[in-house]
Image 1 (cartoon, rainbow, N blue to C red):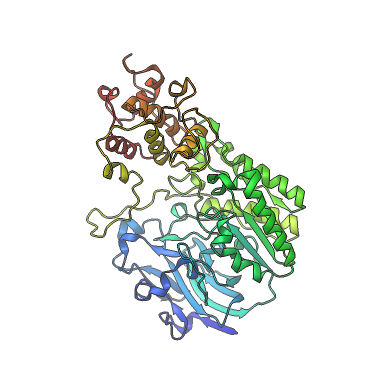
Image 2: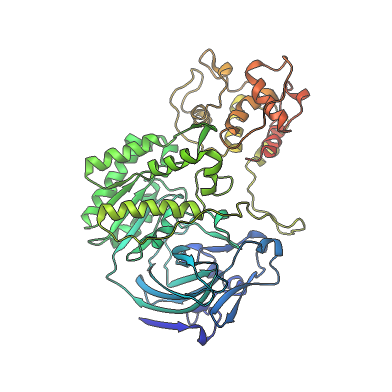
Length: 557
């Protein structure tokens, strides 16, 4: 296959009959086949623009640029950009070499993405200056998120942000070395919301690797929620394994979801399954590489880091020695960065309000470490890609007040209003609600901490998570029992909630409270009063499920 296009040939709308063209907002809305992010550009319009085109294409002396449609609100477009998206149908699966010519238009930053929003190049181009970007694009089947079966990919997608697309040449490149990426949500090709800003886009480090490794083809089969077990059971390894060939590299980073399951603990099912992947990768003649799980921005309080993944990182390091497999210690690298910068400053590398998943800036930085360490481990050339300093906006956009469309169901506290809203909160429910409010990860592991809770209780994993995060007041467990069904007052609940909140953001100095508030809850309750979450005269009253949920919403973690 040999394909060439330049901007003097115009900007035809994408046509499924010809398999070629530019995808604007109108084209995207008209073709449901374009709505699967895994087989497209990986950019999605914000939900309140559903069915309303927000982008168009303008042709200039520099090439084709994305422009805002009339429906795009001015406030949504401020400091955000739209991509120009070209889709080219190809004859079959494999690797394709793209030469993409981009031209600067305003002297600003230009980003070139291929496939599912994989960053191939970024840099600053003066108006009229051109850059030819070479990118190797993978076209292989993939199991989309939420689906049971693989779907075929049949196109190369190219998206340019911040500049003009001037020309594209595409050809098959069957002998290109491939890097197969296996992992979870911290690795996957995350979608970016339109209009786009890197600080408010989820991103996995796997989708940023091409910017550092331009001479190989990255094919990313990581997905949100996957474990070492579900990567196999949900069909992702069935795509990768038969396509491995001599010289390919296979990266494995799991752990964030494995640690939630009792049978996939660090020195058990987790390493057992990694060992199997290593064996099968080597059998195919490919090179397995292990990566320790990305560290979270998790703190007990602003000065004490809380490392939840130490056991899994250590297990991977030991497994690498046992099996003579290269290990890239991303966990240590990310943790050092987070601890050095501190809770608040480190947030700039993560999606707003998330403490596990990076934004584009964070994913790019983590990919830089992975690429550099991988290049040393297996002798790969690594591009000297420039640093990407986080810059605003960092606040996600909000829907218009008069929006007629229903919002996605994203309220984590909705059940507390819908189910038994006027019943008084119990200790077990208080722990569960605090975990939701603090955006901690629930687990399904329990280590027999308290005499009155056994592993088969539905809330046992909640208790374990609360204990790991120091959320359980010492006064509750003085005799070795938790008494999970005891009801709680507002002060009791705040003694659980506020210490965890201190590990998420700075809190106000506590207001003085009367001695009638229990001593163990006084500091936390005082902080809540100072934060105007609750009035001081209601602290000793029982708190209902609905009122506790409302309090959590006001906390704004």
